[in-house]
Length: 408
Ligand SMILES: *Cc1c(COP(=O)(O)O)cnc(C)c1O
Image 1 (tube, rainbow, N blue to C red):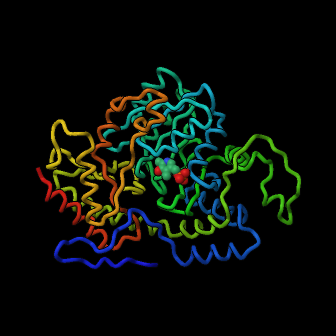
Image 2: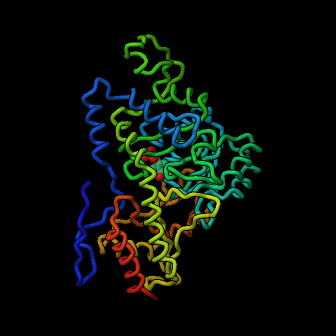
Image 3: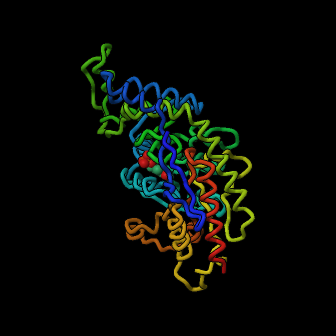
C-alpha cells in the first residue's frame, strides 16, 4: 500500500502532508478479487455476495446475513420487514447520522428522539423507559455510537415489556461486544455500514443480520419484492419465473463490492488490533491533560473504536468566554488542527438541530440537553489502521500544542 511520508519541518513541527481523516485501507487482495469479478460472467448479486454473507454471519456468530448496498438500506429494509409504518412511534437518539432517523420518515412512522448518557453518548435507557411509558413504541433503534455498545440488556428488556422491536444501527460497531456477545447477535435486526470510512469497507455497502425467517423477508423486500433474485433466475439451475409479493426496494449488494468485502473481513482482526493500539497511545497522551476528556470504554464492553471522539473542557481554552457563542471553542480547535494538517471531523450534529427535524417537530436545542451540551465540545481525531506511528505522534503533538498555545 501507499504510505504518505510525513517529512517533518523542525521549525514549526507541522507535518508537510495533510493527514486525511479516514481513508480506506485496501490491498492487492481486494484489487485482484475485484478484477477477477470484472473478468467473470457475474458482476452483480451472485456467488461472491453469497460467500461474503456466509463469512460475515460466521464471523459474528449470527444466524444469517444479507448483503445490501448501504446501512441506510439495511435500516429501511429492517423497518419495512417488521411492518413499521404510519401511526407507529420509533424511539432513537439525536446523537447519530441523519440516515438513522431518515429511514423512520421513509416508512411513514414517527421518530421520537430521547437524550443520551453523558459518558458514552449512547441512547439513555432511562429516557427510553420514560418515553415508552407515555406511549409504547413500535420499534427502538439504538445506535452504538463510535463503536461503544449501548446498554442492550436494559433496552431489550424495555422492548419486550412494551412489545417493541429492536433494530440496531451498528454502522460503527463492527466488531463490538456487549457482555461477551458480539453486536449483530442481539436485537431483532442489526444493520452494519460498509461505507468508505467504516471499519470494513466495500466503498458503499451494508449488511443486515437477523434470523433466517426475518432475513428471507428482508431479502425479498431488498430486491423489488421478487420471490427469486436474478442469480436464481439467470443461472444454469435457475428459472425465468418469479412473483412480486411486495413493492420492494433496489438495495442489493454487487459482487464487485462483495469482492472487496471478502478480503476486508479477513483483515478485520488485524485492523482492530491496530485501532486499539492507536487508541492506547491517544489515551496515554491525553488523559493527563486537564483540558481534554478521553472517550470511555465501560468494563462490560469491547469497543469497536470506529471513532476517537475527544471532548474539550471548554473553560480551559482562551477562546472561551462565559457568554460566548456555543461551539466557538470547538470550531477554533478544529481550525487549529486543520492548520496543523491534521484531518478532523465532528460526530454528530445532533438530529434535532437539522432544519428538517427542527421545523417538522418544533425541537429547541435544549430539548436534549446532554446531546446539545456535548455537541459543543466533541472533536473526532483520525483513527484508522493505515496510520503510521509517526502519524499518531503528529496528531498527539498537534493536539497538545493547541492546548498549550491556547490555555486560558
Ligand atoms: C455511516 C452511518 C450510517 C449510514 O451508513 P451508509 O452505509 O452510508 O448508509 C448510519 N448510521 C450511522 C451512525 C453512520 O455512522
